[in-house]
Length: 355
Image (cartoon, rainbow, N blue to C red):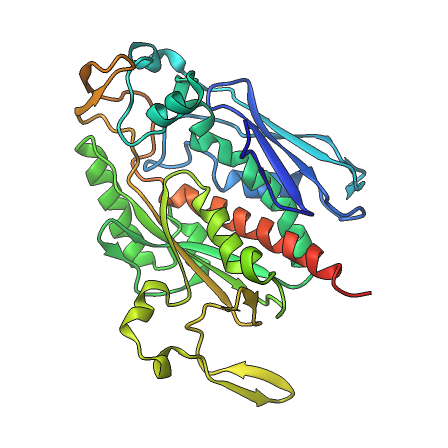
């Protein structure tokens, strides 16, 4: 199967299924001598761990990482880094009676049509369970980009029709929905619980701010920084849309309003605004990179839905099991990880530009 690897110089390959023995990642191309230990990686992985609140899945996974290779005495060795996370609380019994039925909104049908076989347990390889491997790899990437002073902050700005109105970053880890507006966070949580009570689900909008990115990252034409960011974010399960900077709102502006004016102050280039979201011509301009992406409502719901089975027979399905009524809060660390991977790769590529 192709499509399991991402990156060029800093390259990752993830493996494993939702109800398999483990999920994991191989990181190739990480520079040697980088200081990192298990706690650095575990801290990031814990941010997306299931079962942490009343609005998350009831599946209880410890998500304890195991570093199999590539790190010795707290430093990377320059050889491939292998990290696994064992699945300890998978319950496949809820899937036995629907193993021949395609769940609406899932990749059951498309995986079956592509490969002629699929792991029906919890979605198998298509499950968001795979993203724990991305977050583990992203923790290593964050170590690389932090040496350049780059800071990534992700937060939920909308759940269903509830929108955040303030940005107070210290609030993000204080609530269950990872929102930087404490008042909106309470309303968002209630909206999720209301949907859950109706055997339904809701979606959300996530914003990620990337500060202190040096100007010059990204390649022209096909490997533009925003193109790679878009690819990385759209590869996350349940993501259905992305914008950078003012994004789709730029259609409401005149060119004179949308262009970010420039000035030279105190020996530094300054931008009067940031409608471009920190990227021009696919290359970072030194401004804060702003990324927003939409996460659809969770596809696994207990409300009856119409579907078909593998033989084309029409069926009515009610999906049992343990599922998040809203995926957005746990998608925040995944989005951060994917952007960290893009930036770590871009930094390493940029270093090859000079002698």
